[in-house]
Image (cartoon, rainbow, N blue to C red; front, side, top):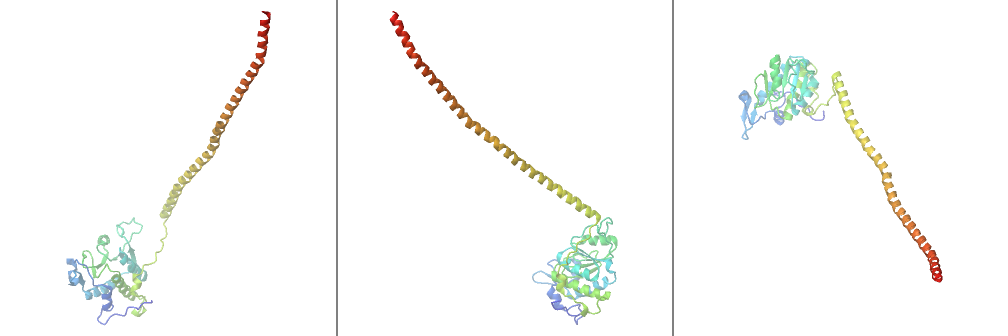
Amino acid sequence: MTEEKVEEESKDGMPVKQELFLEAGVHIGTKMRTNDMREFIFKRRDDGLYILDLRKSADKIMEAAKFVAQFRPEEVTVVASRIYSGNPASRFAALTGVNVIAGRYVPGTMTNIQYKKFIEPKLIIVCDPKGERQAIKESKQTGAKVIGFCDSDNETRNIDLVVPVNNKGKRSLALVFYILTRELMMAQGTIKSYEDFKYNISYFEQPMEEKKEEETPAEAKQEETDEKAEAKEEKPEEKEAVKEEKPKKEEAKETPKEEKPKEKAEAAPKKEVKKAEAKEEKAEAKKEKEKKAAPEEEKKSEAKEEKK
């Protein structure tokens, strides 16, 4: 690791130096304190924040590590509903082999055998008793033991082992899981000494890379139906496109029709002109006849006068 590695157990018996606890803010509580957490409070600051007793926090973290070591990894499940707890909990699970539920806890996970992710742990670790009370409730129904990371404002009912720590701080939770991982790997025989532990606190703050879960046949069918539904949704769009093209063709057909009336309109004046010309020709013909007829009439009138 690039950053400095946390030193071994401090001389005063704490799992890490007290300065690291202080820097991570493990001792910082909230402005509320429950009666259940009274025994773990060191003092109340002037700004109203309750301060947890670091000595008790360190002792309980080590006690929790020893308690977890009594179970097989597959029998232990960490419930981490918050992002700040999900990252270190996932790192802890990856290094020690325990199970983790990162994100929302689905009701019935430990009681509904029909649920596809049904589990039967013998021990659960809850990072936030308020947000994960459903997991605590189901563990009581199934008889599973509970380790709880409890802040000053938490209740400890139905929690078998209380670990008084700041359960809302990113660095605080990373340090707690750092210690748990190191101690559990020592108990499992994965490492022989603290020097063999090659991880630092920052490593537990980093998110795990998400692995795509294998699809079940039911999920595969569901995806197929979704794809078909999407395909059906696309088809009407294609039909609409075809419909839009049809009016264009109709417009193309209509354009010559529009030209025909123009031709008729142009043809109408021509006919009228022809008619007018014909009338004029007739009128001229009549005049010519009248001119021709006029001398004959004059001759006839002259002949009648001579007879008289």
